[in-house]
Image 1 (spheres, rainbow, N blue to C red):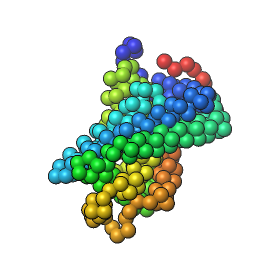
Image 2 (cartoon, rainbow, N blue to C red):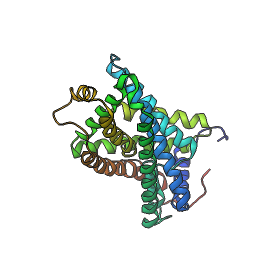
Image 3 (cartoon, rainbow, N blue to C red):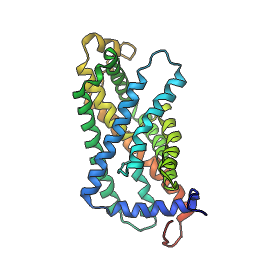
Image 4 (cartoon, one colour):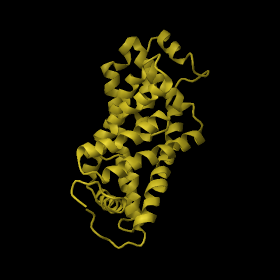
Length: 283
């Protein structure tokens, strides 16, 4: 295979395992700093998609497609910028399954990265709020932010969990494909369809929700009473997003993301390509 061809799945599996070992052994400070960046990157994609979602009159399917495409900004920045994203790092389970890292190292990575992602996402929420972006288009962007958060808070735990599973299966497939890419253009291209799909289908991503939920709560506080009433008019009674409802969404979504990434992607590819294979260098 030439140096410009994409890696084939067996080679991708070997590389994913090797990357998992490297990530699990990364210094805590570097890991946290890169995780803060990833949280901010995903939040920027979420903020961008909120603006794009404020487009009344666009046909439903086209509207969802545009929202999904705009959200791709977040994962593109993560992949190309080398940041650490909790959901993508569920693929580290491949290195764990091959016993190249222990459970403590796996959980250490996930814990540090999740904390950093949360800091980056919430910090971006505060910047967006301070910048007054919710006032754009006569407060229509703020109304969209409230509706997005309210819709997420209205999901049952089972719905949130199931959507979390499906979402991170797609996210980890995007990351998996990026491991086989040979150029920056390749990495961007393989991200677009999986990420657009999960956003267009209304699936749930824990790190994105660390932006969407606080952003909706703060937007509800920023809007004028008339604008807030209009935002909530098409929603069920008592649909205002709150911190308690946000937490009730984040827990099942995060658990679902872990299952989607580790079981539906990492475990399957490990069983097919790495089970029983001795350590060998990836390309």
